[in-house]
Length: 162
Image 1 (cartoon, rainbow, N blue to C red):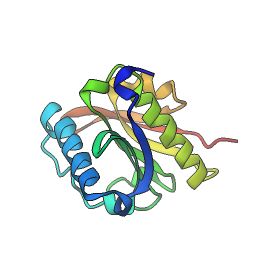
Image 2: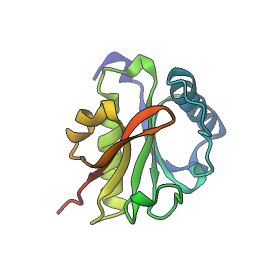
Image 3: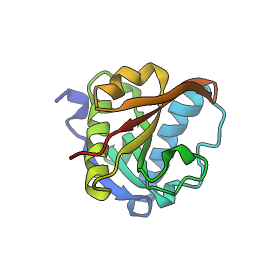
Image 4: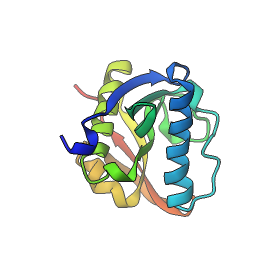
């Protein structure tokens, strides 16, 4: 395990199970990545977090990696999700990138979805440049590329296991 990850604690929880400092750190990390680094002005705090499951990688109270899992039917803005759980808001602190943290976040998320929603495919909106990464995790593109917040995206699905 890379040195920067040796102190990580992995937590799978609902939003209201996080401490206030973890929530603050999570929102700060997502703001840093999605709004500042990717230069996207959008409502990152969209009201869905309290209804979702979260997988976070923490060093103390600092969230250094996170994923949000949206259950079927929760997000009215993504009807293409259908009756599948969706993985989204995948973020990793820049000091952990290139060390496999993204793959760990995703494999933990896939396992979580498989346990919580057995027999269901998993949906995600992927930034187009990450297509090969997600394909390596069993996701398949469906539909054409589209632009969301100025960034090319694609819809992907990981077929249900079994």
